[in-house]
Length: 213
Image (cartoon, rainbow, N blue to C red):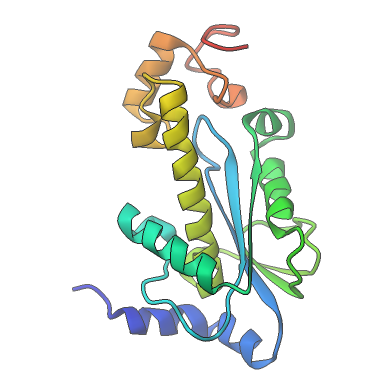
């Protein structure tokens, strides 16, 4: 049986978000999408949500259907006091490593957002313009982080659909760049395209092989 969405909202807000709202603190949720895939950007959402109205069905983006995420994306961007999306490219991921690239994308997402506190899903020492509170599994524990996770996931999924058109044959629109059997088979057959993270695919393709530089 599915949990009552109102009860789920209460669970998501009571530990972290509600005390900060009650204290009058301006705070943002920060979360990423795309640390694990073999290609595409790592994408971060950063959002300052008001205490009212709370948006039903907001939750960890991984628990939601694509249709629900798309609906919530629109409601979140319309309701948020401030929001931003930041990204780091495959080239930056290869140059910096995925953790540092994620931190970079987080700083880009938070640029211009006047928050005193940033609730961050798991990542520490980001360098954000306010006090950072890293929370393990934060997208399942904080309403604001969950909202940020939806912004990041929808943005990245839309970009992967665009890459699927630009580089057909890999199935990006289906697997979103993750290392599925279909994706790895396409990599071996076609070689990498410019959207691939070269540091992630060394076991699947020989150096210099593929469609792009």
